[in-house]
Amino acid sequence: MDSSLASILNSLTPLFVIVVGISFFKVKISRRKILGTIIGFVGLFFLILSKGVSTSNFYYSGLILIATIMYGLNVNIVGFYLKDVEPIKMATISLAIMAIPAGILAVQHHIIPLFQYDVEARDCILVAAFLGVMGSAVATALFYVLINRAGGLFASLVTYVIPIIGVGWGLYFHEAITLIQVGCLAIILGGVYLANK
Image 1: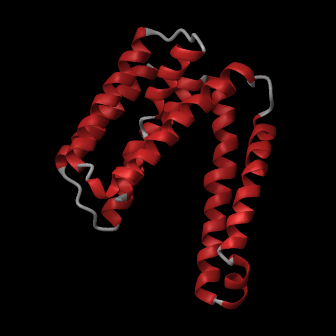
Image 2 (image 1 turned 180 degrees about the vertical axis):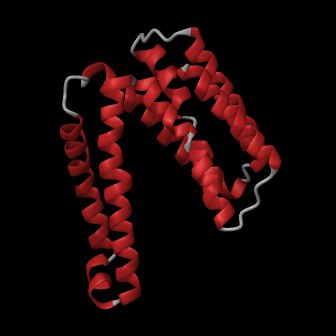
């Protein structure tokens, strides 16, 4: 699956923050924020159509869709039940729990012997560890700070920026990106602006 398509699908998070918030948490959201989110979703929808979702990556697209639903649930739970808990503590606990299955996978895939004896693998493992610390640990703590200070919907709107980064990586790795896709990104950013105005 292209990195640009994966990042675009991840931007469904704000829609699921609203859907889960209204459905299960009785959250009241202003019409302007809903309209901005819908505009962003329309841009996202056309962007997905322009990229195309083939049957070969339909399974992986489904996994990303499930993840965005879980993000929507997470944002609402944190905003509703855990707003008084310090963000660093929340991030520490959630990442510590994640360390258990990650450790099991590391043992199953023989990561320690690879790290000890394969120089190329060692470099890859170190880069992955750096990305894990910066992309997961630090980003999770900052995300929880953002939820506490600005609210769940605003925090989830940062995922609308992810397609821009993903498309940038796609350009770097010579993935096919068209002007239609760039136009769709502009629609998405317009929706983000309206929702946060």
